[in-house]
Image (cartoon, rainbow, N blue to C red; front, side, top):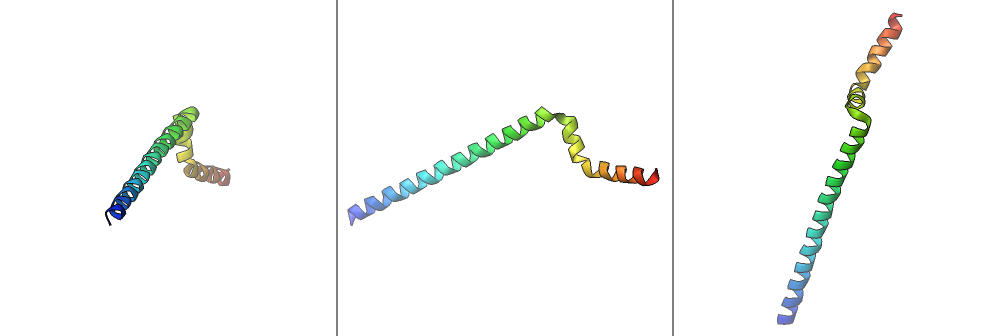
Length: 69
């Protein structure tokens, strides 16, 4: 019975270690993702990013302008 308890404890400890390692990898991946996206945005510049945010409004203005001319 004692051997079974030790075995169970080792398994539980190993499972927790695997879980903790996976969580750490996920956090690192998310951090790298955020940094890479920020680098991408900085390559294109803030003006481009702002135009992308306003794209729908710009399209409406173009359509209105085309209908008025």
